[in-house]
Image (tube, rainbow, N blue to C red; front, side, top):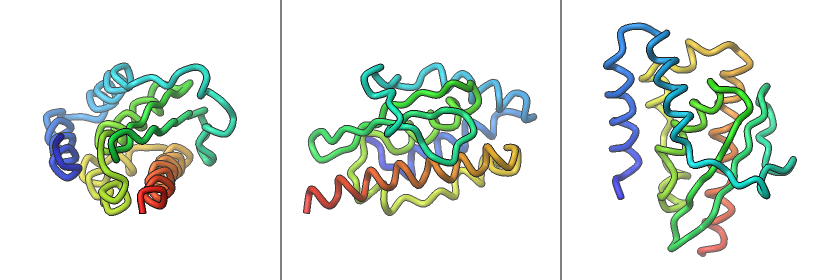
Length: 141
């Protein structure tokens, strides 16, 4: 499996291929369609990320000391945003997720092109995925 940094660089490269933000939004929507979808049994209130305007559910499983995320959202742009994070961090070890920086999000210009509420939601998504990593890391120790 590729390292988080390599995957994040790939994502930055992909976004840099598009000239304008309409194309980038379309690409994010496409990414959302490829998201590993959370099973209905996990679409519960305790899996909803607090601080997101839309509903975003995230579930994490630890397999072979790596965390695998599944997610879904009721909004297409938000689904694209969580898909970017899931792609970058799913299948990685908890410590790698905890240590991962999120500069790549600034590099693709995501924060500045999101509404303030979506930008807050993005921060909440990052926090939630890292909290899962912290929880699983403590189980491994």
